[in-house]
Image 1 (cartoon, rainbow, N blue to C red):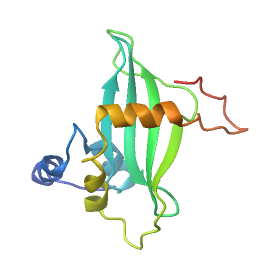
Image 2: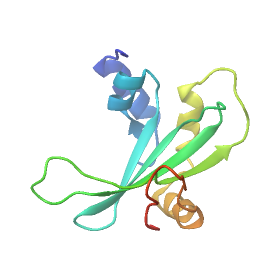
Image 3: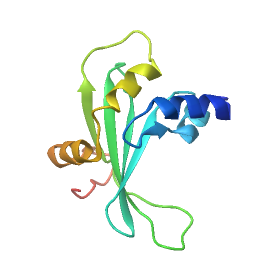
Image 4: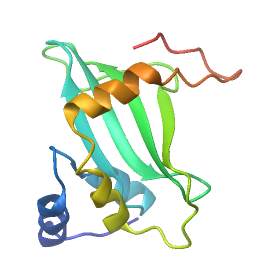
Length: 132
């Protein structure tokens, strides 16, 4: 389990652009720093973009669509969402600064463009997500 101080979180978030920020829960449970951004679609739906390293140590963007009914505590999603590799380079060290650098170009419009061009991830083990 990862440990991080409020000061460290603020320092990382201050370097991020375009409403990106550290995914604190992911860090605590997986001990890996990733960045998160949410774009509201309507009163009950939003897209969540996670900027992280994949299993090949390449920078990738994971996109999930969530349904959050007003009054409910938790949001829900189905399927595996979408994944796209943003940088094919296989790094030897997962550095948060490389992810932060991507936040300069990943505006809301750019994230929505990537979402529109990326197909839903398919797997034989899970029910396929609807297109979003």
